[in-house]
Image (cartoon, rainbow, N blue to C red):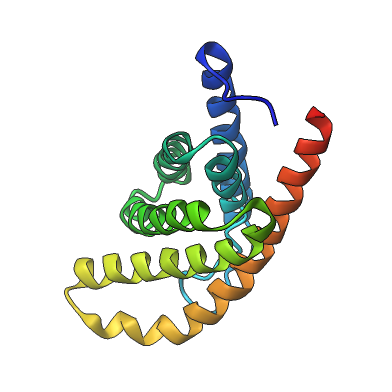
Length: 169
Protein backbone atom coordinates (compact mmCIF):
# COMPACT_ATOMS: atom_id res chain seq x y z
CA UNK A 1 0.00 0.00 0.00
CA UNK A 2 1.17 3.55 -0.71
CA UNK A 3 2.44 5.80 2.08
CA UNK A 4 0.23 7.98 4.24
CA UNK A 5 -1.94 10.55 2.49
CA UNK A 6 -1.15 14.14 3.49
CA UNK A 7 -2.60 17.60 3.02
CA UNK A 8 -5.68 18.11 0.89
CA UNK A 9 -5.77 14.44 -0.11
CA UNK A 10 -5.96 13.42 3.54
CA UNK A 11 -8.68 15.96 4.25
CA UNK A 12 -10.67 14.78 1.24
CA UNK A 13 -10.30 11.13 2.28
CA UNK A 14 -11.40 11.92 5.85
CA UNK A 15 -14.43 13.84 4.57
CA UNK A 16 -15.33 11.03 2.18
CA UNK A 17 -15.02 8.35 4.87
CA UNK A 18 -17.09 10.43 7.28
CA UNK A 19 -19.78 10.93 4.63
CA UNK A 20 -19.83 7.21 3.83
CA UNK A 21 -20.04 6.25 7.52
CA UNK A 22 -22.78 8.82 8.13
CA UNK A 23 -24.78 7.62 5.12
CA UNK A 24 -24.53 4.00 6.26
CA UNK A 25 -25.51 5.01 9.81
CA UNK A 26 -28.57 6.94 8.65
CA UNK A 27 -29.62 4.18 6.23
CA UNK A 28 -29.30 1.57 8.97
CA UNK A 29 -31.42 3.74 11.29
CA UNK A 30 -34.29 3.23 8.83
CA UNK A 31 -34.26 -0.55 9.30
CA UNK A 32 -36.88 -2.11 11.59
CA UNK A 33 -35.96 -2.12 15.27
CA UNK A 34 -34.75 -5.41 16.73
CA UNK A 35 -36.63 -6.34 19.96
CA UNK A 36 -33.52 -5.89 22.12
CA UNK A 37 -32.85 -2.18 22.76
CA UNK A 38 -29.57 -0.94 21.32
CA UNK A 39 -29.01 -3.86 18.95
CA UNK A 40 -28.00 -2.78 15.45
CA UNK A 41 -25.84 -4.24 12.75
CA UNK A 42 -23.30 -1.45 13.17
CA UNK A 43 -22.46 -1.32 9.49
CA UNK A 44 -20.92 2.16 9.79
CA UNK A 45 -18.22 0.56 11.92
CA UNK A 46 -16.82 -1.02 8.77
CA UNK A 47 -15.57 2.46 7.93
CA UNK A 48 -14.04 2.95 11.39
CA UNK A 49 -12.24 -0.40 11.21
CA UNK A 50 -10.99 0.47 7.73
CA UNK A 51 -9.77 3.87 8.94
CA UNK A 52 -7.88 2.42 11.93
CA UNK A 53 -6.04 -0.14 9.82
CA UNK A 54 -5.42 2.02 6.74
CA UNK A 55 -5.24 5.62 7.93
CA UNK A 56 -4.26 5.22 11.57
CA UNK A 57 -5.89 5.77 14.97
CA UNK A 58 -5.98 9.58 14.88
CA UNK A 59 -7.68 9.79 11.51
CA UNK A 60 -10.07 7.00 12.49
CA UNK A 61 -11.03 8.97 15.60
CA UNK A 62 -11.79 12.02 13.44
CA UNK A 63 -14.04 9.93 11.18
CA UNK A 64 -15.75 8.35 14.20
CA UNK A 65 -16.30 11.69 15.94
CA UNK A 66 -17.72 13.25 12.78
CA UNK A 67 -20.08 10.34 12.21
CA UNK A 68 -21.26 10.22 15.83
CA UNK A 69 -21.90 13.97 16.06
CA UNK A 70 -23.48 14.39 12.64
CA UNK A 71 -25.49 11.19 13.08
CA UNK A 72 -27.04 12.60 16.25
CA UNK A 73 -27.74 15.93 14.55
CA UNK A 74 -29.19 14.48 11.34
CA UNK A 75 -31.27 11.84 13.11
CA UNK A 76 -32.64 14.49 15.48
CA UNK A 77 -31.83 12.31 18.47
CA UNK A 78 -29.22 14.27 20.40
CA UNK A 79 -29.48 11.88 23.36
CA UNK A 80 -27.90 9.21 21.16
CA UNK A 81 -24.77 11.37 21.11
CA UNK A 82 -23.97 10.30 24.68
CA UNK A 83 -24.46 6.60 24.01
CA UNK A 84 -22.77 6.58 20.61
CA UNK A 85 -19.81 8.60 21.87
CA UNK A 86 -19.31 6.38 24.93
CA UNK A 87 -19.53 3.19 22.89
CA UNK A 88 -17.51 4.61 20.03
CA UNK A 89 -14.61 5.84 22.17
CA UNK A 90 -14.35 2.59 24.12
CA UNK A 91 -14.61 0.54 20.93
CA UNK A 92 -12.05 2.73 19.13
CA UNK A 93 -9.61 2.39 22.05
CA UNK A 94 -9.82 -1.40 21.99
CA UNK A 95 -9.67 -1.43 18.20
CA UNK A 96 -6.47 0.65 18.22
CA UNK A 97 -4.86 -1.58 20.85
CA UNK A 98 -5.73 -4.77 18.96
CA UNK A 99 -4.62 -3.23 15.64
CA UNK A 100 -1.10 -3.03 17.12
CA UNK A 101 -1.19 -6.69 18.12
CA UNK A 102 -2.90 -8.26 15.11
CA UNK A 103 -2.56 -7.99 11.34
CA UNK A 104 -4.93 -7.01 8.54
CA UNK A 105 -5.61 -10.70 8.01
CA UNK A 106 -7.03 -10.87 11.54
CA UNK A 107 -9.50 -7.97 11.35
CA UNK A 108 -12.33 -10.45 11.54
CA UNK A 109 -11.09 -11.21 15.08
CA UNK A 110 -10.60 -7.57 16.09
CA UNK A 111 -14.03 -6.30 15.11
CA UNK A 112 -16.17 -8.56 17.37
CA UNK A 113 -14.08 -7.56 20.40
CA UNK A 114 -14.43 -3.88 19.49
CA UNK A 115 -18.19 -4.36 19.02
CA UNK A 116 -18.42 -5.95 22.45
CA UNK A 117 -16.71 -2.95 24.02
CA UNK A 118 -18.95 -0.61 22.03
CA UNK A 119 -22.00 -2.21 23.62
CA UNK A 120 -20.36 -2.15 27.04
CA UNK A 121 -19.62 1.57 26.63
CA UNK A 122 -23.23 2.24 25.72
CA UNK A 123 -24.48 0.28 28.72
CA UNK A 124 -22.13 2.16 31.05
CA UNK A 125 -23.38 5.46 29.61
CA UNK A 126 -27.00 4.32 30.09
CA UNK A 127 -26.25 3.30 33.69
CA UNK A 128 -24.76 6.73 34.33
CA UNK A 129 -27.65 8.60 32.69
CA UNK A 130 -30.30 6.52 34.45
CA UNK A 131 -28.44 6.30 37.74
CA UNK A 132 -29.02 2.55 37.83
CA UNK A 133 -27.09 -0.60 37.02
CA UNK A 134 -30.34 -2.33 36.02
CA UNK A 135 -29.50 -1.78 32.33
CA UNK A 136 -26.71 -4.32 32.71
CA UNK A 137 -29.43 -6.99 32.51
CA UNK A 138 -29.22 -6.47 28.72
CA UNK A 139 -25.52 -7.40 28.69
CA UNK A 140 -25.93 -11.12 27.78
CA UNK A 141 -28.09 -10.22 24.76
CA UNK A 142 -25.73 -7.46 23.69
CA UNK A 143 -22.71 -9.77 23.97
CA UNK A 144 -24.30 -12.20 21.51
CA UNK A 145 -25.33 -9.35 19.21
CA UNK A 146 -21.87 -7.79 19.39
CA UNK A 147 -20.10 -10.98 18.45
CA UNK A 148 -22.41 -11.67 15.51
CA UNK A 149 -22.50 -8.08 14.21
CA UNK A 150 -18.79 -7.54 14.89
CA UNK A 151 -17.89 -10.69 13.01
CA UNK A 152 -19.96 -9.54 10.03
CA UNK A 153 -18.50 -6.03 9.98
CA UNK A 154 -15.00 -7.38 10.57
CA UNK A 155 -15.24 -9.74 7.61
CA UNK A 156 -16.62 -6.90 5.47
CA UNK A 157 -13.86 -4.48 6.56
CA UNK A 158 -11.16 -7.08 5.92
CA UNK A 159 -12.56 -7.81 2.45
CA UNK A 160 -12.76 -4.07 1.70
CA UNK A 161 -9.16 -3.47 2.72
CA UNK A 162 -7.92 -6.47 0.71
CA UNK A 163 -9.88 -5.36 -2.35
CA UNK A 164 -8.63 -1.77 -2.15
CA UNK A 165 -5.05 -2.97 -1.62
CA UNK A 166 -5.32 -4.97 -4.86
CA UNK A 167 -6.68 -1.94 -6.71
CA UNK A 168 -3.74 0.21 -5.59
CA UNK A 169 -1.15 -2.28 -6.85
